[in-house]
Image (tube, rainbow, N blue to C red; front, side, top):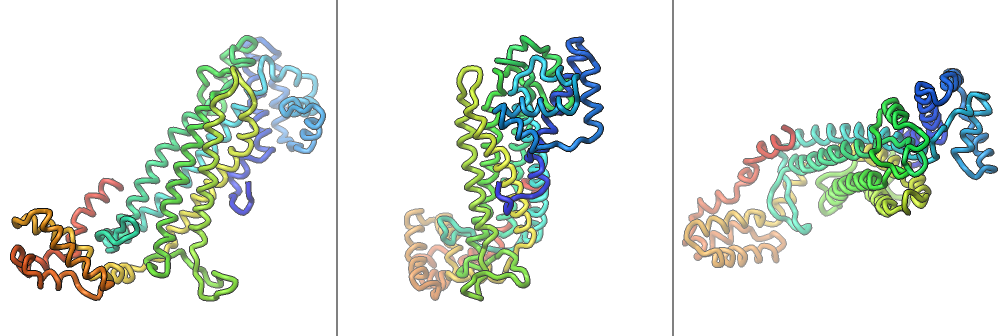
Length: 436
């Protein structure tokens, strides 16, 4: 985790103290149920909860010092709790294995992280919707292969982004449900030394579902699904970020990141206003996507368990969630303050002499009796003259001078095909599909 790209709420979920608090809750809830079942004295759980009620400080350094000797993190934690609680603490961890604590804790952390990320997505969706409505009918050029294609509106560009992030939200809800599972099943997952009722009790207390079959560990296909979902969200972040970066290029300059008073763009060139936020988002997206591959590789563990996944998840759990949280918040800020230049959009559309209306002329010619092959040839030969003149010539003027074209279409018919508003007649339909 890089502090530069981290926000406090998400970071706090992954700090050692927060982890140990979840460990304690798992152990105490399990001991509580074991007491109800008569496996351990009910006084054991009361002793644990009474100590917990004093809101003790989690002494991370003391636990680390014990682990330096035991070389086992869960044992170090249990030893530290026992030193503070006393004799009743010996009834903790009855019939449990370390993975019961570690895997269930990771499930809690990932589920709570997903809740923060879902709130982030809601904020982003709200910002995109507001700007989309604002520019619902702002004309701009659509590009394919980076080349002018046909007119769209800037609102439609943002509507596409909204629909994509709405899908991301749906996927994350499903991924959260899949990851939020509890395993308290003991060595190799057979419940030989612990009643399944303990697992259900812990799951209920922590807001989790029980893992149907845990082979000492929760199957890592769940985690692969979760981190793959984060990677897809990162891809969507980069898609919108790259769009902004392109639109901010000097030759385009249809939109740009907000440039605050006193901000500097370059140490050497005082005139620079660079798309640093969206460039940074591209970099963060690369990192988040990179975490998906080791999560996928974690699926194939040896037999009932090994710990090859453990070191991986110590990296990717906090890093992926913290980075994505930061990235979503940053993108929301970019969208919220994005500077949008409708006049420049119009100027760019007009720059190529009306080439953007070529398809309408092509279709009109075919509808007036010209074969598609001939219609394409007639429009293209005039369009190429405009292209090669860098827009100094006008497509409509050349078409009016082309006898083969005018034999099929009158000047009035040709002029009608250059009506910009024609392209926007279904904007309301698209917005209704996206926003309801």
